[in-house]
Length: 160
Image: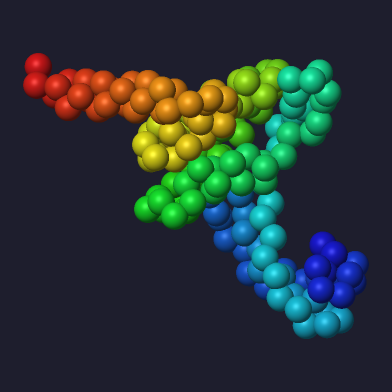
């Protein structure tokens, strides 16, 4: 692994441990040339995924970009970063095991909305406002009404 500080081609693994509920391996490394320490993550990749953009362009799937979407939607929200990592890992697993090598952006967006709905209502509304291209306050009101109805339905579900 190349050192991010000095660019040396060699680094030594000092510690390895499972991460992300066993879906990745976290490695602490040290560069023998400059002494820099850094962390890498190793994940299983079942297949190379391509994202089909609305314009028809294809780009390689980027897990970091998916994680960034969650971070933006959940900025300053009380959501444990480990829960976010698990949600991202779950989406990646679903995409990789779907059997498809090309995934439309709409499909990824729906998976993110589904995960955000379970994590945080405010994050869900934030993401939905961009994903669903909200044009005015009525769009926010409609989404909040849907959430309120869902929450009311959840609280009465245990009354049976």
